[in-house]
Image (cartoon, rainbow, N blue to C red; front, side):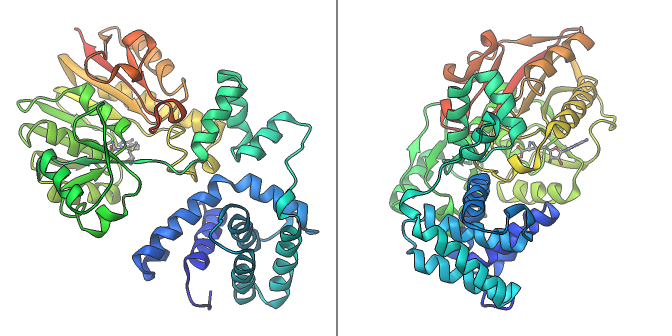
Length: 439
Ligand SMILES: C[S@@+](CC[C@H](N)C(=O)[O-])C[C@H]1O[C@@H](n2cnc3c(N)ncnc32)[C@H](O)[C@@H]1O
């Protein structure tokens, strides 16, 4: 685009790239000031969280159907409608003008006129917008809550409509963020004092030590505290797997799907930087980030190895963390794009890969050793069903109680797993079990 880059124009570029190529690349925003960069993330995630509903509204006020529009026009209109309907702080005329300008510069004056006409049509009915009214119940729910139909079907069948609605509503809210103080670089008490001194509001969690719920991670970035390794951005539910593995400073640990390393760093902290953590991942790019984190967090007991964990041969060890690649249906609020990337086929593929990874991980656990399997999915096939199938294949493993390792509120399956749900626990949706090799 030729026009001067703004948070809105860059957001549109990112959304077009996502639609056309499946790539969500925020680096396009690097040329903007840091406040505008944060605004870009908000725009992109908020628009993706409401995409089906925005498309429904566009369809109501346009003669050209949304399915027939180029992705560039679609996303310019989504931005305009989002601004008009959801952003109280933006006057309608400003929202229309911005979208029209972006359309003119990138697509020509005729598309600018079309954008103007559609948005002005909507503006006339802004106080009485039409509601989705499809006869097909799944389509109606999917449009209202902007989730894909396959997921709506799964969740309404499994949880019932009311519960599924609450879950989808939670996915459509701006997420809360947790910051974890890194005791390899500071002390939790000092970190609290530091936050207070800088006027940062936080709520200390009583679920795990050193976790603070905050409105935004922006101050932690701008003050350089993440780069200096004082703290990590880590959802509290992501902390449960390392706490369940309970690594001891004398032990050797494998973290098999480790990158970008947030759990490796937490384990290093739990081990006071002693013992040994071998962080394995298939992606060199992501491992580079892990290696950088290990440096800045002073996590000196982490070694890095690029390998396919389904194939790599490693000696038996004390304990293995398998934080498996998954559909990520527990993190759809933070990663709104994921809902548009996943389908039944990707779920089946994830289940297959997890099962292979589990078989491989089992070979690496010494007799009496531990294996923690975790995901950020809500789907049973990736979670308890996956574990039950693993136990059928591996009679030398048994499940252990998770009680005492994680807070009571998140314990599921009669004490044998933890499972969080965004609408029930106010955090990301994570699952985990502790398995012990018995013979
Ligand atoms: C859920 S993410 C891990 C997050 C990480 N544990 C953390 O807490 O920061 C899953 C990781 O699995 C890696 N992965 C996928 N397939 C793999 C394989 N066959 N072997 C090793 N790593 C794999 C991906 O590159 C990705 O980094």
